[in-house]
Amino acid sequence: MISFNYETDFKLQDEIAKRQWISDLIEEENCREGEINYIFCSDDYLHKINIDFLNHDTLTDIISFDYSVGKKLHGDIFISVDRVEENAKDFGVSFDNEMSRVMAHGVLHYCGYKDKTDADQKVMTSKEDYYLKKFI
Image 1 (cartoon, rainbow, N blue to C red):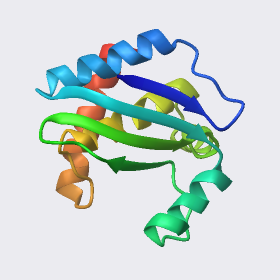
Image 2 (cartoon, rainbow, N blue to C red; image 1 turned 60 degrees about the horizontal axis):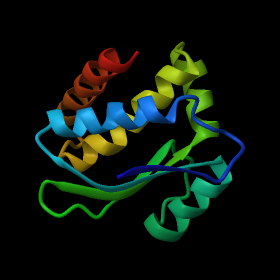
Image 3 (cartoon, rainbow, N blue to C red; image 1 turned 120 degrees about the vertical axis):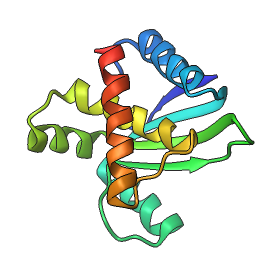
């Protein structure tokens, strides 16, 4: 089950459509949906998690904690609404486009995709683009 939780005033506009889109992504990646929690928060909230759990003193748009068992995906995906908004402006895309990309990014990590190397980033971006076209 995919759930959306809010630690900020932000609310997704169409939770049902977003939930179905993520479920379809998971299925197309030959994985199974478990308990996946999206937590939308502020820069300050996510920065504290980054420091406390990852020892990184930086701002980020997303942190995901993967509790998957095999191909059954479970985890908590924290997304900074502030960072997504700023990144959307920097990349010249709509807020909704950037938010969808980040949401896909988190669950694609659970599907096994990485983004530490240039080659891995290229594959991840390609997958994000593919799934964005299916939603937008």
